[in-house]
Image (cartoon, rainbow, N blue to C red):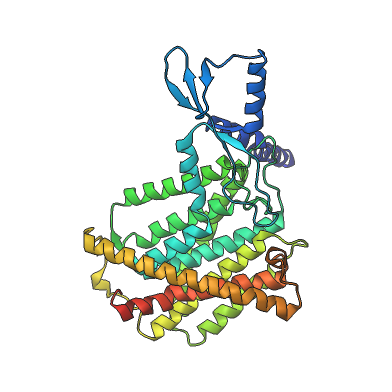
Length: 416
């Protein structure tokens, strides 16, 4: 019995080591046309010295290489760099060369599906234009998935794939730990929870919804390996972890949402719970971007829940009768698209203004309260006393605006 268990453990260990191998990430990048600029320059130097195959063309000043035999022109390979610096260290990242532009833009889109810009655009769009009932529940799942994922990262503390051999096409989150991939977790939880919550409430082909969810999940997961930010094991663990959390929390969504809407003291309990989770989850001895991200997620969830409660109490949230279900997808008309775009435009302007104002208020205020110099904002934000209240209050207010301030504004101007 012990021998069988030992053999199974050894096989599991070999599988884990194989999936965590950074060479797998590097080979996937090479397969997708990602190349180090240093190796490209070294090869060009060897070719110029006669140590390798020479180019058949002549280099022109306009950056094109003309083929001497066919007379055609091809664009010169251009060095690229990560679009955003590391949010903690200011690191800009190494140069790289992309030989397949289509895959680069596709996987850039995939990785953006797990970033703040997507969240602050997609969730409001869904709530304002499609179904707030579903949107509230998806956000509950998203908050728990991201919170537990970030806490697990800080407990396991496995580093991201090393460079070399991996090329870092993104360095924004490079200071965080890698296991599990929270991009993979959100990229799994959001489309699957949307599928589970809309099926039976809306009329659409189930296979189409499942296919879209699988494409969404696959795109996000593959993008994290392509970007060099996660090992295959990080991504697989993230997917399985998200499915486990979804299984545990999905049956309780109706209870949680009903409590948030109807219980008299729900706002006080929600704010206290989310704040306590943020404070007691930070066990790291050094500052990490995951701390701010966790506070941002918890603040957003608290703001959404409190805004939902206020909207319900004021009669702004109305639930359809069971006879009205399932909804049918309305025909796409110019009027429908125009109203949706107008809601998004007005709403996002309000959200961005609120975020900017709260940032201007909370960071200097936290610095003053805790006696921290505020001349270097990035350095000040590396203190938990500054980063926590800034992120929690700012994004709590943004979440509150998504569910109450902006919908109330829509009612006032006749766009609800």
